Length: 128
Length: 230
Image (cartoon, rainbow over all chains, first blue to last red; front, side, top):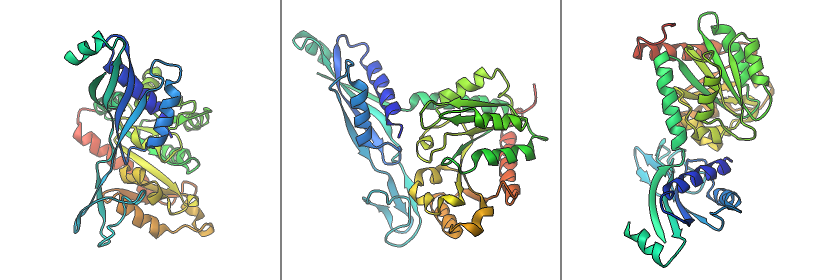
């Protein structure tokens, strides 16, 4: 629901991370989004598209790494995988209460930056 | 093409502001609760009754998050406590930087309190992810909303330290499976508390008020020098 605000914050962080790299443009931002971060990856990508339209980042994309929450049952141990919307309930095997951890990630992992002059600048960029 | 490693939390700026607020509140010994629920579940009414019960013995204040109108802050001011409206202009949650700014702009009227109530924008989803420097989150669920809400919005019900079931005076008139709610909340928040209240009839209000006064006493015990009026 607040994907646009998150997208704006992602851009602020992305721009700051390449501020000292000279002329060029951001082509991709890699993100980690957790199961419990209340962020819908698809909506975040739409928000990003709308946000960067007519800006230097136009045409750039988000690469979202989805991070599931970990479900743990005291009796059965870790439960791998789950159907969407089924976390935080009772253990499907024994009916015990599940402990849920992680999945609250919402991180900018990496920014892909394309230097303006591919000839010289790219070599300079890679030398860093 | 260069790949620049960033590894930064998107909400880092909010988290930093929240940490600053938490430090300020610790110094003043102020208990801060962040109230979250869907619109119309009775947050402001619960606060009005809470204020009526506690304002004689405690210094209280309120921050009211809404998309539009000053109504909620006015209702609290009418109860005789300082309150400020934060208008988010469409945003679905409060941000710690908005709280910081609102407190600063009140020039001391919302500082050095015993309890600060932050009433978030009515929404069970987005406010869950934003730390406001509070001691704990409280989620309200009115009996008219239906008993399936905890499992439908598990994030807030598992993060809230207290679930307040409101409008229990309406239980005879609506189909609401209270035991099912108790069970869902126990599953989602094994260490959480659940109280059932009616702000209208006063039922359950004592249990709710003692959660607040106990939490304040505990905070004061941890920071013995705090809370002494300047």
